[in-house]
Length: 160
Image (cartoon, rainbow, N blue to C red; front, top):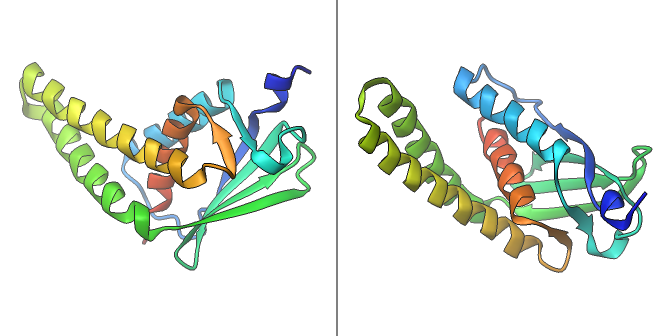
């Protein structure tokens, strides 16, 4: 397998111990993010760049975002944690604008929907860049991978 083929996620699991019934739109976003992530991503822990492809288990534990990176055989490789507090504000704002977007789809003009969607994409990009910055030196990933992981981080923030 090529170096790029080894520097990717081939399996992702979300720790959904506290899963609540989510809106269909959220479930769809989660499913699409996982599908797209597995189809095309570039991801590797800096200290273990040649140990892929990787399994990734995402969770939130004790106010920490946990990236449990595992080998292809699911044996442990690296556990990277980030404080959740840095993401709370942007995730909250992203949820608010997503709710506005879903409501706009039902009753707004195409130009209003487009304006809200631009704001939604802007916040999503901001969260994705924040993720890449916080993981710099620990994990390397491309922007599309960061975008999909940010979507999954948002899903993890939905608690019962």
